[in-house]
Image (cartoon, rainbow, N blue to C red):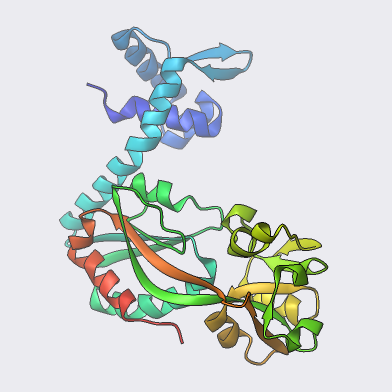
Length: 296
């Protein structure tokens, strides 16, 4: 039977790069950590790492165990937290992952009612543009994923909660402002302002520009929708945002929303959970509130 201690040690050594640093992170002596690994290696007749000069190199067995640690330890740590919550009289914990940065304002409209209705549930939101949401959900690092790009996996259940249209945001005096919609060739000489994600994750590329074999002259990125709108209002380029968010945040700026293509570029926000966990009361409660909250 493999217990969690050697897996924890391997993960920390991989993260910190040395046994000394890992021992400090785990609040144990270096000799105690080395002894624990030596005992584990002797029991299983393997080596988990080899010295390579001043650094360590994981063996094949070590790399296998490291992968196991990355998959199992988040689940065990989460289980420990849940048990502690129960012991302290709390109902549980809901960890929400965001893959849709423009939807943070929508989430804030859901969060207030949820926190009032479920005061005994710990609530945490994780946001990152490069966040691997599906991997985090499958790895039990989060319990619910907000994403515009659901993936068909038998272990997961995605529920659509609201539809929206992506629009091209431009200065009101821009030459394209008089058109009913933008064609792909209209963007060839433009600077496009987007969130900092890979091109494959941007619908303006995958669903609009690439099929027409078009590219903008330049692409720049901005970390916040507020900055995207300010750059656009200053004539630095064109942005792509949900129409509702453009009207909400850009109301007092000299901006115009232009449809992307004759039929528009439509999306849906989905909430993903691990299958059967949608029945957990405080997760079902979040889904219910989210389905009934539409952006302004």
